[in-house]
Length: 116
Length: 114
Image 1 (cartoon, one colour):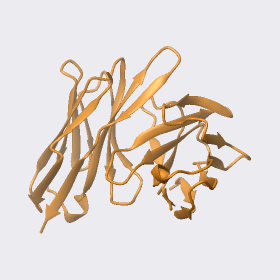
Image 2: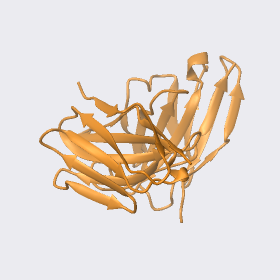
Image 3: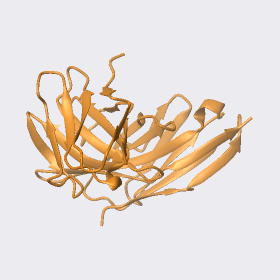
């Protein structure tokens, strides 16, 4: 069964450094998402991406964050100048179409980002 | 304000027993409601998706209900198994003319005891 993959599974970085989290969505999917889950808290939507541009973004997704689909398979989340409070699990997800209908949204296993 | 509230926050039941988890939402305009299962340290896995016109949806031992009038949903788990121990998250989507919002509940942490 096709699945969303994410690398690395765990990333440790120093405060102020830039990190890039990588995701490979399911191949025939058109919508891609990044979510964040701080330890012990609920999942929060960051951004959705469609047709090579941002479709939606939350208040969390400020200028520190950017997303890119550098080739036909990868979908990346870049966090510039990381802060301690960026430590969280970051989930990538993809769906065939917008999640407003009955389209399944498939989540990857997550990347645990630890900022020290 | 768009909100999704889940109850109980946590629940412990014995293996083989049934349980029901609740989700109340104030999201508008409603598009769909999803229940996810999230094992510790893993990504959420979809259990059910319901749109406005659906009031019940089953997936094996999981049955979700939706009352769009009262804006309530429930997830019923039948004959629980140890592997059902996880967080169960209710997620509601709103769709506007040119945008959509996805709002997550805080989840119910379910523990199944042998």
